[in-house]
Length: 337
Ligand code: 3HC
Image (cartoon, rainbow, N blue to C red; front, side, top):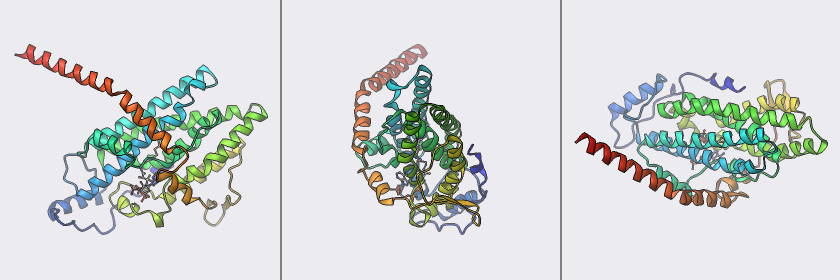
């Protein structure tokens, strides 16, 4: 449904190369720039500028945190799913999100950071994760709307990342996007079923759409003009499509889906612009977005407390796995001796 995002220019680095920063080797910098300009891949063993490495650690770890915090709003509904079929789908989906977090933490580890450092940054509130997961899931319709709109927005942003210049991140994203595509479709299908139900069920879907729509538009990040990382991220081929372009693609793809579903998107300014060949849409509340990013959304504290508790509760499992690995290693050393 969202594969059009693969249609992006092949040479994001076609602008003037960034000068080698102080202390960086100009010869290796030139080789790095040439590889980026030729749309090549950077692998963990390759030389890379420190700022490129730091940007990737920032983005990939934030992405990983978003995946595992993103398990919480929906995980909340596993025990209350309306049928065995919906429960099985939801369990599989939430488990997939945990898997995405693991691929992404592994990709970030190839850049020389450790899982413990990343988790410490999350648990202490220093690291960001997606604004969207700081809102409550009030009804079963929220689960469908998260699949349709939140995962739909996530795929729109993530398909271009399959062509990111950093190899391990790009390869992780291929599988993530395939699974996200299933998540989006199961959400849309669950809503289609609800929309054939009672008036109360239809109202529940509309209410969930009203509450999530604007938050999903904000999820793509600040407008391009206010996005401090975009220009460099695109120059390095990490980001392939800008925040505003992705937001527009999402709006354009979603309006016809809303029509088929029979819901209204809560924006009086939403209308087709013949000249632009895109939908115009209204003003996003950026104050609300920054409140959520900066720890003051409705569920920030609860989400972090739940993650910290899960980490502490899992300590005995990590200890047992390490003890088992040490025992196995000692046994194989003894056999080899
Ligand atoms: N939530 C929280 N913080 C956000 C944000 C959001 N929705 N959008 C932007 N920000 C933050 C940025 O991280 C940056 O903060 P920092 O400089 O302290 O790191 C600041 O706002 C300015 O934004 P920029 O546009 O300059 O930042 P980027 O160039 O990094 O772009 C991004 C932001 C588009 C989110 C980009 O980092 C990206 O594409 N990341 C990978 C995808 C990702 O992390 N998605 C999160 C959702 S995953 C998910 O939804 C799970 C799925 O299962 C549903």
